[in-house]
Image (cartoon, rainbow, N blue to C red):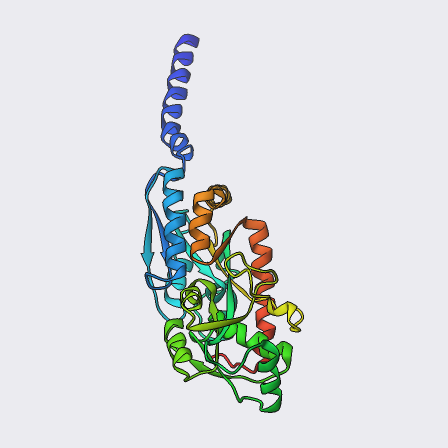
Length: 328
């Protein structure tokens, strides 16, 4: 009888172990085991799209799975960002977020449909993007001091072009006004290219354009640079001083490109993603490609990126609210 009981017990244990095997194997499955969707909430062809494609290419190679770009443009990046906020937090949907989507949109739109901090996990700050203050090559304004003097004499007497609410051009202009105590008249366009066309044509007075977009026109002597929005001299514009060194103390405006995952994504996956993206960004070849776009490589992972994002929300919220902007 004891022998029969022993045999029965052994059989029962074997059956139980067999039942556990699928669960154990599933739990040990390495991530990722299928393609990853990388949402870009802007149209193809811009800096956000180009940055994402560079990162996706390197990430695909390192993870051994395709990382597929999915452009979902619309309303200052809101539509694509909403889609990712609602996506399954399983590591198979990530997105390219920017200062617009993940810092300032809440101050421009009442019904945003997502919380840029609570609904996402910052994975990696890929890089920062500086702007340059430019005027037409035949403009009578030869310096930042002359622009400030003109605005002091006639508040609102000069116009600046932007790519719309929450764009780096607008934020640069708002910060300029805030620190200098001046008033500019904003002219909004559907994109930075249209603003630059009107600048060259004499319809507007100045633009805070991204360095990458302005560089060809600077090289072609169609526009003239008066200052950069970074706190340091940029390698691509070695003869142009930062605005912070031209009497506008504390001026710093850098937009940025980062990778986010939906809130709830398992931390081991977030950590692996952050580590692998940092390795991609650390590659000299990738850094050269990013700098060609005007993106200065960073590679900050979750904790550092999270601290940075929260500081950006606080900083720009104060600037935008002080400017009297009312969310629509």
